[in-house]
Length: 75
Image (spheres, rainbow, N blue to C red):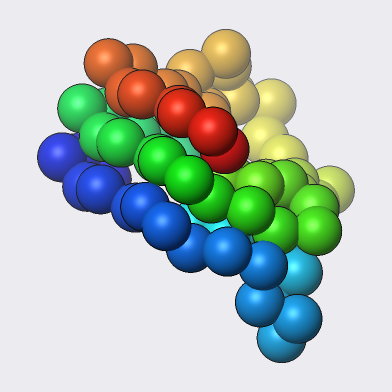
């Protein structure tokens, strides 16, 4: 994800995890030059990531989930 903007998404009872991004068992996630503003959900506010054992690899390093140059405001 690059140069995305999520804002003013408030709690939706249908999607209680991550108002902008819900990543369940994804192999990797890189977010760069993005804005997450005025977001609210029951769990995870802007982002909710859940890793699962079947997706874990011995080669996974610290860059599996990476967020750079990104603003989180009231999220």
